[in-house]
Length: 125
Image: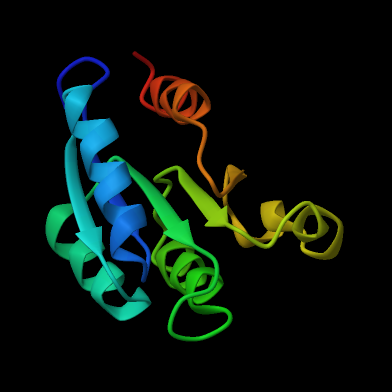
């Protein structure tokens, strides 16, 4: 990974969200890999070995994002992962996301300056 730049895997079943992540992050010099399902995300994770992951909580199944995170963490990976959700603040009070092994939760619609700050901190640029 070049200083502060890396491969970022984005997993979401909404093509508009994937396009948003790809546009914003590639403009900052990152390589963005996208997947529309948790299963495709796992395949991309193994093949591309990303430096960071953004994963939607609810995709083809209600807990597809959490399932993805559990599989990755079970493999021993320490890659920083963030949940992306439109569920709202109720998520923070109903789900202990830290127990899943994610660094944090990002609300949709995604705020670009906050997203870039998260990426910069996670990739230590």
